[in-house]
Length: 148
Image (cartoon, rainbow, N blue to C red; front, top):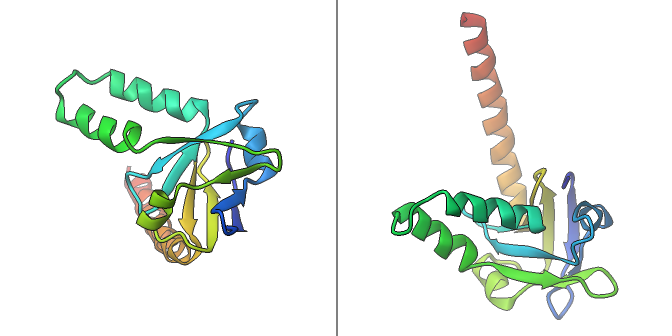
């Protein structure tokens, strides 16, 4: 399981050391799958289980379904398999870094079965927005439960 948030600095070759806890969560998989996230302006990454989940989701949709086509293009078409080197580093592709403003410091944030890679500045803004949304969402959920 991917949990917590880590800040890492890219080196001149766009390499980052993946957190040991994230590498351990991959259960023997020697790399990660990485692609532009659908719901946020960042990269989404994970192991074989994440890839299999998207494959299964896409497979449930009929060929020719517009959602299937959108997912195939966005997820599979944008996906890159990144391998760990002997130091536990992955190299982020230049095109993905450029598209998401990733130049120096990144935040890697665990989301259970996957994690996201953000520019540090963009993640700090996103985190605050998500805290407000979580706070408001929980308050609304509790109010709904009290009415029932």
